[in-house]
Length: 241
Length: 241
Image 1 (tube, each protein chain N blue to C red):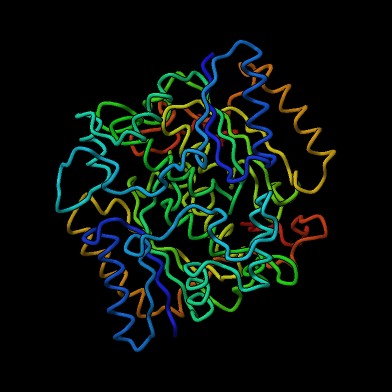
Image 2 (tube, rainbow over the protein chains, first blue to last red; image 1 turned 180 degrees about the vertical axis):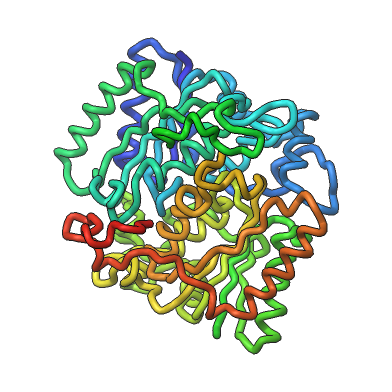
């Protein structure tokens, strides 16, 4: 498979860095093709603005999505955005490696979504969204590290259920919306606290990487399960997530 | 009251810009003191890195949170972070005005949380979190605009419940974690589609601003409702959110 790793951590010696390095070496050894977008090392531009386009649709009023659609038609994205979009089209599987900061992705990675997941590229007229989004046919996995323990992220946990309340906006709102098929995330809970835990997590991550194709997908509903008012049809409401 | 508006949109003529301008003029007319952090106009740095500190705890290994704690002790934050922290301490009420991009805040605003909501300032040793977070005693309100219609954000809606699944990581994970008391968000649904809707939303927002103190708070649980394993105590599990 072609695997793209999008990695966001400011410190190469961090545990996130170790997970990324392990993914590169293991996947390469297994015969996969691997590309890495190391956002900090690339000094990736996080902030969406007019500089993201070589084309100009309306020079007096920046409607960012409209400029994206125009750029998608006219091949007018800035070079850094175009390069990331090409990597996505090349990839069969995308791994996002990042620390969970403020219950979401670090700003540099949020900016990657804001800028690279463009209207006209992953969604918008003539494309679709969710199971018919522009990146359909590809899988994706979040791999993240937390600052709070696992039990704080349970349904009655203080920080909120990790899947339903915390990662939903990323897995469903970003990955799935764009057509990617999100698989179960890999989560290292509070790895900063204990070196033995870190060793254990690296071992578990290695096992994961050996069976990338077998990781269960998150069972989100296809668009066909929703009616014309975007409501889940009655017959699918059991076991809803 | 002292009101801080943190505003994130690249186009001053946008509807987000109109909401921000209305907030400034109305709140000022009502006798409040108003400060605005216009993140795009300030060219606010979005990406957390070593440049955020004048102090250095460990020059060989950037542990961002540890550097934050050290900077909090030593008054070592970079000037732009310090200025935002001072505005937060000055404020009684904080309004966040932003478009909902990828089911979260734009990267420039995420970077504001990553960098300004520092360990040692809003949470961490000797402070608390949630109802005892560093910014306790202050209220905050999200004011946002969407690209999908309201019914897509209902409990069985295609995009996920706006409160439980989408805004939770911001209201609970960012605002409440830091000690702010989040009130019900103001949401303008797909304002890009219709000028009449925009007029209507401006009118509704104006009414909101006239009664800032009366906006109901989101009924999140205080820390005392959780046991020593961060689990919500049995007696509070009805009507949990």
